[in-house]
Length: 348
DNA sequence: GCCACCGGTGGC
DNA sequence: GCCACCGGTGGC
Image (cartoon, rainbow, N blue to C red; front, side, top):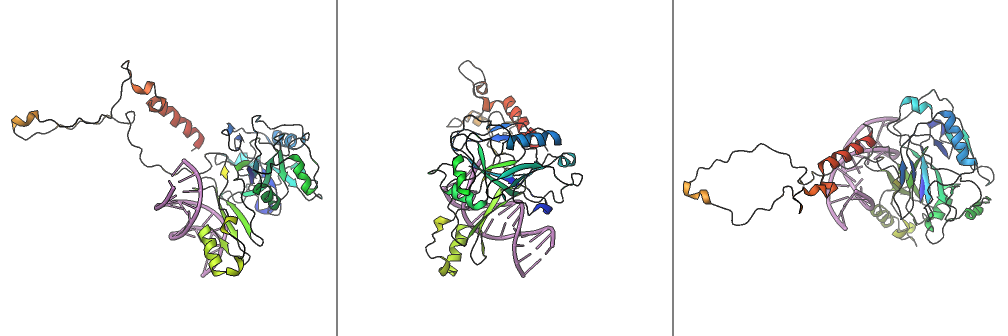
């Protein structure tokens, strides 16, 4: 289940579905199954990007991940990577999803106006730009015209897998033979949405607010009540019902879910600093040995501990070799390589 | 003063 | 490590 996120330019707030190029890695994902496939980010020229987006939206293409079986739903965002530069920002362009054509959605790539101007607010959190669901049969992505339809699909995605034919609900004629609406080509930020979330009760609206890259959380969910109250948690909703019993009729807390999507890019969210890890043999640093000063009587020199100390030092295998050679996670060299790899992703 | 956004933390 | 929950705060 996917959502594609877009960060709208302030002047483009009226555009419902806008995607801007970013250097996000290409990611595909399979619900409840294999890990996402991530390929390194690439930088493309404006021309290349335009051509590729056109191909993605109009040309014959198929999802790159062939082993997906389940239906996915998606939300897209545009937000560029923290590693992007002003020059790269200039190369951004938009893909506009125009669903205003009587249900016959047309997706077209357009050049972003004012490419020379940097985006007004680079720190503003991204906005959801598009919803897309994967056909359970052909695995192609189908854009969903609006959030309401998306929420309907999401609510029953497990029991009623999404198919290309489902788009006929909004009078769109598309089949598995048609090219995918949108491709996971690294030009957008994708997020895995949670399946089977109930539609908000009548009069209520479920709002998803994305946070900026590097935040401690990816997003926040809140509900707006019929009275306009903004509720941030189930206890909030419960308290609201206590004070507005007239709005609680027939509405259980089960109708509310504050689950947030998960970004496909693992480093989108700042990792919580971990507690100091217990020292393992490979992390133990040689430290200066303090001389033991013994001031007791000489006859106590043979004093020994009654119980043997547990040994936390390197353990040898049966051949007398360090244990970490058989256990890569204990290998200090292996650990250093892993750390270097992690640092590569941080771009800091 | 309000509120969107963010950080922290306790519980699991 | 993830998530639910809520307090803090900067910008308006």
